[in-house]
Amino acid sequence: SIDKMQKSTVIHTTSSPFKVTLLDSTQFEKTTAPLNTFENRGSDIKISSVDNSSAMFTPSSSVHKPLNRNCTTPNTILNISDSNDTLKKILSVVLKIKYDVENLTHNQNRMNNILNDVILTNDRSVLSLGDSVTTINDDNDYSLMLPLHNEDELSDFENKLLNKSFRLNVVNGLKRLMKNTLTSTIRQILRTIFDDELLQNFSYVGQKKKKIFSTLASCAIIFEAIRTMKLFHDVPNSNIETPIKIYIAGAAFRKRK
Image 1: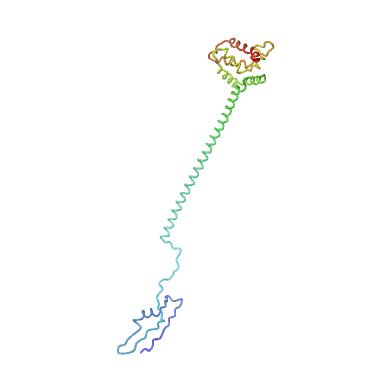
Image 2 (image 1 turned 45 degrees about the vertical axis):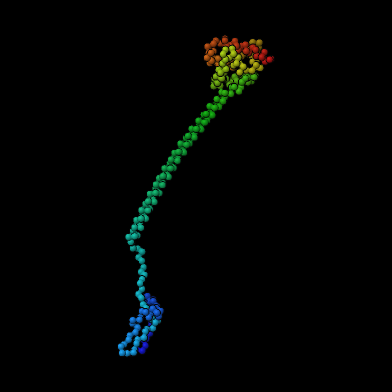
């Protein structure tokens, strides 16, 4: 008979290919229950159970092996292909953006050139218009000079009449003074141009040691203005001279009033 089952001890080391799991007494009894007790018929001898401190061995379910990083799998090939396609798309977009930027730059430079040309043209037009306005103002300032009160003003007016544009403008202005008769028209023109203070020093041909009026450019423009009027464009010079002589001769008398 077996009086006592000897206890056995399992020694496991790091080189063992098995994974060792220690069991508590309850787990051990359930695992070894069918094998622990043998009952012989006709005998009172029993095999006592093995010590609960025994260990259960289980094979390791995972053995780590180093990966071969140089191997190429189908997934790796697909990833490389996708990356190449993505790079191609990015490159295409970048090239398109570059082309668009170049076009924008070209168009902007062209617009700047056109704008500069327009500004330059406008500046020239403004300068030309300014010159024209200045000329017009110069031509129109004759009305600010009239009537003439002394010989200094007369001298300035005579000098301005040497300018054809100024002279023409004065004639056109005097043309608007036309009346129903030649005499009244001439009197209105003389009253507009001369003050009696100045006219009393003149006679038409220089009688009584007075200054000659007929040689003045201011006298000539009276004839020119009369010739531009429809009612009097064909009258003889003598018909124009007579009203002028009478008006100049009465300047001193009108001054005393």
